Image (cartoon, rainbow, N blue to C red; front, side):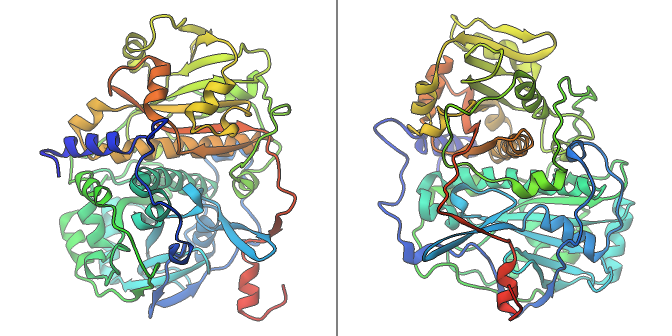
Length: 543
C-alpha cells in the first residue's frame, strides 16, 4: 500500500497501463474450467418471478432523453424497468455453444455488476430488499423490511419511489483481464447506471444518485456485512439511487438512523460459488479500498438547460433501440459512413443537461472529453478532433496539447474542434491495441478525463471518472443503433501512446476508455434466440 490514497490510485493507474511491448499484468491463459458464473443466485432466498412486458412503453427515440408520462410503481412496471435495463436481450448460439447477451453491456460479456432493489409493498411484492437475478428475471428476497421503516424512507424523500443499488464482483473481470479489471468493472458500473436511468425515463420516473452516501453505508444497507461470501467472490457496494415519480429535488442521502435500521435486519440466502479456484490480484483490492467513498457533503450540480443543437431523429422506438443494442465485433470499412448531421447529433447527446437522461442522476460535473478520429463523416474533413464536454477545461487542454494543433471551431457555439486534417485510420487502430475495428469505423474516439486534480482532491472520484466514461459509452451505443449503425467499447488501448498523440506530457489528463462506431459485419454462423426462451424449457413449456 502506498503512503496516501491518491498515491495508491496513481500507482494502480500507471501500473495497469498497456504499452506496445509491455501489457498490463494478466493471466497467462484463460482457465475455462474456472470461468466465473455470470449470474449470481442466493440459495435459500424466497424467489419472486417477474412478468415480462406484454407491451413496451410507447416512448419514441426522443423519449430516451425527455420526460415521459408517469407510470405507477406496480410490480409490472418495476419488472419492466428491470427488463429494459439489466435483463437478457438475446441468446447467441453456434453448434456446441450458447451464451447470453444483456441490455447492459460488459467488458468481455463477463458482467461483474449485481443489482439490488429496496421496494415498498405493492401488489404481490412485500416490502423488502431484493437481489435481481437476470437469468430468471426474478427477485430474490434477502430481507424483510418493516413497513414503518419504509415509511420513514418515504417521508425522508417526500415522494413515492424505491431504491436501486449496484455492486461489483472484481473476480469476474480479473479472471480474464488481470490487474486492469478494476477499470473495466467501473466502466460497467457507468453503463449499468445509464441503462437504469434510460429505462426509468421510459416509465416517467426520475432517478438520483445519493451522492452523499459512503460505500460502507451502502454495504450495510444491503446486508453485505452479514453475507457469507466465498473467498474473492464478495461484492463491493458502489451506488445507491432513488427512483421516484416527482420532478422535485430530493435529499442526496439517507439519515444515519435509517441506515442503522437497515443494517440491523436479518438477511437470507447464501450466494452460490462462482468459481472453484480463484487468483487474487492484490493491487485490485488495495485500490478498491483506496477509492471507497466516505460520507461527504451532498453535491448539487447545475448542467444548464441548453437544448440540443443538432436533432437527428430515428424511426425506432426508445425500447427498440435499447433492446437491439449489441457490441460490434467487426466493421465494413467501405460502408461505415455517417452523415455530418448524425455525427453532430451523437456528440450533442453526450453533453450533460439538467433533467435530461442519463447524466441528470448527478454523478459529477463533466470531467471527460472526446479525442476523436473522424474516418468517414460526410461533408467533414477527415482528421483528429476534440469534443470538449466542459468548456472550463478548454484553455487548459489547448495549452497542454500539441502546439501545432489547429483548434478550429467546426460549428459556431458547438464544442467540436478540428486539430489536424488527414487519414488517421492506422493510428486509431494501433493505439487501440492494434484492433482493426478502431480504424474500419466511421469514427472512433478516446475518452480523456481530467485526472490528476480529480484524484488528488477526492481520491474516491477515480471510480466516478470511469462511471462517467461508461455512461458516455451507453449514450454512444444507443445513438449508434438509432442511426442504423453499431458501436463497441474498447478497453484495450496503449494509454501513453494516446497521450503522446494528443501532446500530453503528464497525467493532468488521462485516456480511460475508447469507443468506435460503424457498419457491422454480422457473423452469419450465429443463431439468435429470444432472451427468455430458456425459461420455457425450465418450466417444460413449448419453445
